[in-house]
Amino acid sequence: MMPHLLVVTIVLPLLSTVEVVASGMRAELFSVGTAPLVFTLFMPLCLTGDTLMAARRGVSWRAYSGPWLEERPRQRLLRLGLMQATMGRGAMVRGRGIGNLDRRACYRALKSWFSFLQVLINLLG
Image 1 (cartoon, rainbow, N blue to C red):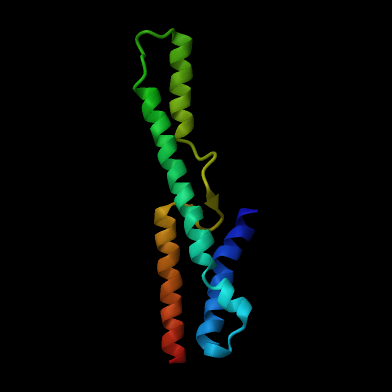
Image 2: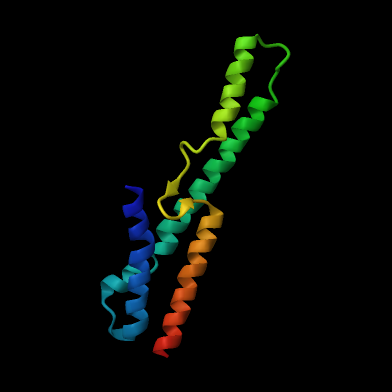
């Protein structure tokens, strides 16, 4: 499902923006309404992924800061396993071809999106 969601949140607004830039005032209402989806869908998705990664690091730090010496060996192993599990790739928001959806991915995607848009404006103008 994630690749389809990324197509809807990145590619469809890009194509709609191309149509709006190329057509000007004659652009279809669908294109005008779809163009800002990159800001209303993709950016919150990336920020959610970034927040999830920060929360995972927080769980690991809280487990590390726990009472190691007062616990039994089995509890310490569970704590260590929890710390290692939070550093894995599971439960991260990621997409095929873009990697983890975080602020860095959002920056890279928006940078390439706007550079493509700038090239298009230069070609049309």
